[in-house]
Length: 131
Image (tube, rainbow, N blue to C red; front, side, top):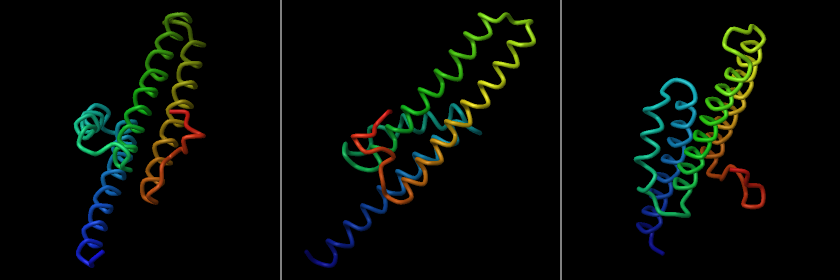
């Protein structure tokens, strides 16, 4: 392998790692500051990277994480309000507590994903995968 081929592989790997880190950052932004725009960016980038690459993995992990977060934050919160009554004070205590706790868990998962992307690793091994 020549020096230029090695440099090309390093540049490709660096670009792949940057995209993986950007995907993890978009996931975090989707959960915090830019909910819709970040998710659209993830959906656009979804098919631009070959399967098996670190960028592809982190993009798909971020999409799954955000879809699961949307379900747990939206559907379960709405269900709690419907079942508990809109005017009940205890319903709001449960809703706010649940939303804060679950939202924090998803933010921590997104930060963990970002640190894994920075260190060129996957979030879960195939044996550990929950998402």
